[in-house]
Image (cartoon, rainbow, N blue to C red; front, side, top):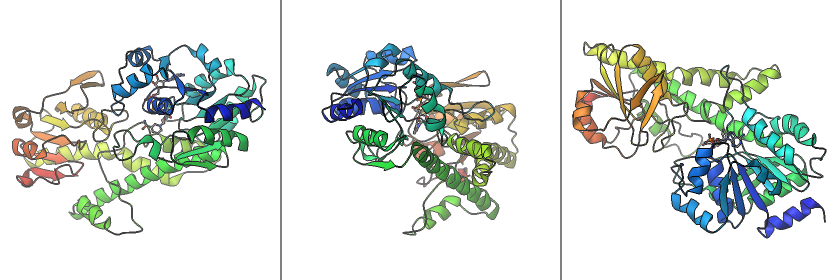
Length: 437
Ligand SMILES: NC(=O)c1ccc[n+]([C@@H]2O[C@H](COP(=O)([O-])OP(=O)(O)OC[C@H]3O[C@@H](n4cnc5c(N)ncnc54)[C@H](O)[C@@H]3O)[C@@H](O)[C@H]2O)c1
């Protein structure tokens, strides 16, 4: 029996040892899911603080309760470490490290390369490696196959390699990890088969595709689709503004069509680690093939200008009441990039706040999920959402539509409210105080 066939049997019997490299929003839930399925799982991270926290049974991911970590640790099925020496004895290695952009907006695959290098140094026959970090088509095949084969081992013969994109949606209470179909594309059909076998133990449905490049492209299509449709919703919001129409009324009514329409909503701009970043991975790759990704460029331009549009509207609004942004007290409600999470990565609130501060506004914020953050060297600390704090603001700007806010009370206490998310849709009283995006 070959080492790879042996691994297949060990996956079926749950004897395979699973490794997850990168224990963030993606890696930690994946690791715990494998542990719940009965595997022994090692989580590896370069961040000692995260490792210490998990070893103490404390989760730093909002969707992941401490109890889930503690249960798997107590059962001896999960532990976290920053000792990469452990890689040698693991059978399946999932890579879930960040893939950000560089300052010049090019793909930064250096974290992935470092993780792959750690694996290469200890690669042994029979291991399966699965890349899960979002990246451009060809990364697995063109970059990492040659790197791993420097070990002298051959992909598909000695070790297996596949790409399987992550689809986790932090804060989404509707779908459990296991309910989101998992796409898998291996370097060879046997690599795909093994990766399907391992993911079938935790996902209800696994969708094999013909290559790692195809699997990489699937993820970029999904997130480019979102970025472009949000760009369209944002442009429709700008059009409705000129036409004197309520964009949310228009979109909600269009969404009653039972086919051929999918609802996307406008807002103050894109945020998070995925939607503002992933399309740039695709357009960068296409540029190298002398192809201009025009839809992506257009959506990036429209979405990227939304914070500026919000800041301009704030100026207009205050101006209408003979007030200047300079010196105005502006209370920002919600700074996370989306509702009901505390994730501030790429949040448009950071840009809006910077623009308003540059114009001389005294900016404060409230967000039930964020304690403090820094913009351009200024530390902003969470303000309690008391009636006094609301009343002290010349303007309240809603940038994130968190659920656990009493919007009725907010509007009642505020002088004026600028709502970029339609968070105040259900507010009945004092509607004259509300201006929408
Ligand atoms: N967050 C999401 O909602 C989401 C959804 C789908 C896909 N993704 C993709 O998944 C990947 C991971 O994203 P995330 O949100 O989990 O990132 P994250 O920043 O939350 O976590 C990444 C973790 O990797 C660790 N790390 C960095 N370099 C490492 C290395 N060389 N070795 C070991 N650990 C290392 C970091 O310390 C961090 O804990 C990215 O490619 C992202 O685009 C994210």
